[in-house]
Image (cartoon, rainbow, N blue to C red; front, side):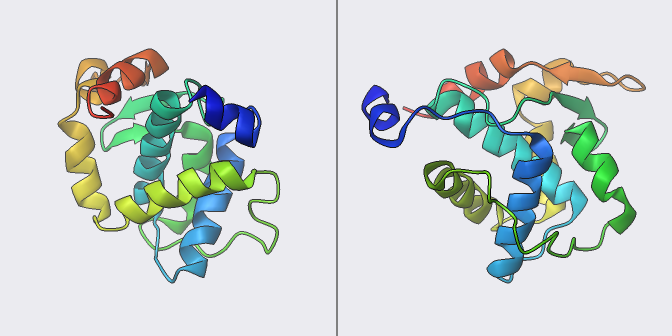
Length: 157
């Protein structure tokens, strides 16, 4: 991992809204639809990937355990106007602040998640320890990055 960081430079954290905008733009470019519900799960898996593979978070905002799985509240509120429909491309400058190495990692996770519906991704996250150990009905509780890293580290070997 250190060799990768030396080769590509140390990764810096982004805002979740920038990452979400990039994911939406990438999906639109690849003719893949993405709803707010699916976007939330993709963000969760992207964060897990960065925590395990890079040793730090991709974005700075916290992820909360909501009824339908992990959610980044600021991203949810920005895109909730689209309801359960697909989100159109946000702008033609999406991803301008994200380096190519990180885009590659994000793209790989988006591609992997695109094989599943939003409902399937909800079911997957509901069966994983980070959400199960954090979720409390009628409460918005933060899923810690440490819990995410610990859970997904088991599968990265």
